Length: 485
Image (cartoon, rainbow, N blue to C red):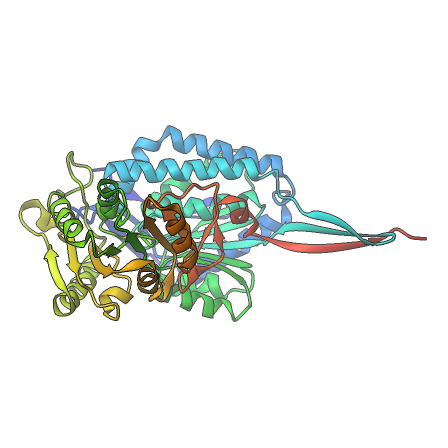
């Protein structure tokens, strides 16, 4: 267990304690032990962070000094890499994922910072000559002040996924951590605060509730853009609040992703990725988790039996312990939500394995639910249609690619999907039919940060990763010049 942290907010280049004396507690979801305390910011503190961010953006050379931005981001990445072991343990203790998953998240996040450090000096526009003696310059400028609202499930990488391109593009950023996981965001911001040559207020950290911090960032006219990763319901509320000032929003939201296995697929590899793609090791608490498994009738029975055997072999426990395959879910509230969905599954479908809270021995200290698989789930069931965010898989049968596409698209969400087959024509044809921002073929969950991703339908608005992920934090300006006499 990492030593207990006492976190502060970072506003205007200074570490400050909450003026209202209120605090939040972050507890290890596997053991119940206190991981950190963090300020529960007041409205005045949020407004102070917005004011200092505005001053930093408009009163310094940050927006125009791309070499400085590149150097700062490279140094930040290097310092986080130097401390990756302590950050890994903190992340495991705070949100419950295994050490391997936590280290993988941090390595990915650091890679994202390095990637956008390289792009910081490559924010390009374009030039055209639309008529004689008239030049059109279209340039990209930073948005201004960005509010980055970070979720608890991947608090390290999803903070960096927003902050790195926003800073690289020349913006000032205010980070609001999730109430369950403020410690890891504090630790990464602390490393940033130790860097030289960074204008005070360019990066701020304000922990607190969504009703105060998140709402003010969304509504305040001095915030130019909100970047949120969270549930679709949260995204709708933030979008509604942001509409009061018509500010830009970038929303990466929920999913109910189909993992489609055709009869000719590589069976062993598809079985491996059925649980890996669902992020069962982290209790399926992932927006793009492949929790809807669509099986060709020809392989259905064999696949379900193998899935049952694999799920029942997984060891639950504290993610820092050796041999643990699956950690806890984040909270008692999440346990209650998941168990409600399991009740729905017991009514609507056939329980294959799991379906209970695991609370024997040391597991009684945390929020553990056994890996659960339901078969023959009706497409119209709430278990099929709604995001559970827990270790619950739904299995469906299909005959032919047309029915597979129909089941896959029978969802409000469109974040990710996968197709397993040795027939590349079927694979590409099905990939084109599926209404989803990302479709994998013969793999699942691989998201290179050099390639763009985004959601369709209620899975979000905007683009993450790649060059377009940088452009997301810019706005276009046309400058026209007449060079005639």
